[in-house]
Image (cartoon, rainbow, N blue to C red; front, side):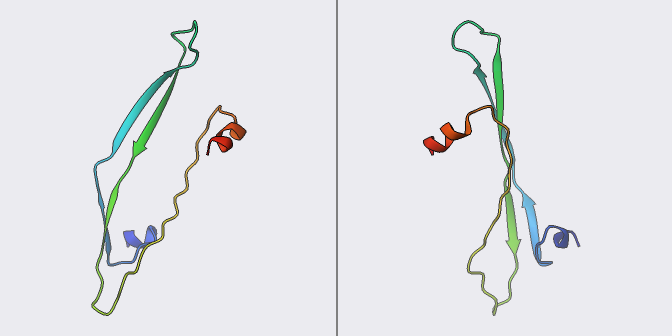
Length: 83
């Protein structure tokens, strides 16, 4: 029943793998304000899917859709030019 909630077939199992978190601290200004800092974090989450198939079934590939959002103070046009 839990797999139906996540949109997975009933014969599929999810196994959680270790997660990691990396913290970054950056100075806001390179000049005088040493105490003024900006903090960022990057979280990495991993999962392992076990899909049981019958002999007549084939899995050719998988398609994933990942949605995320972030807030930034950077100029959006400058970021577009860098990419």
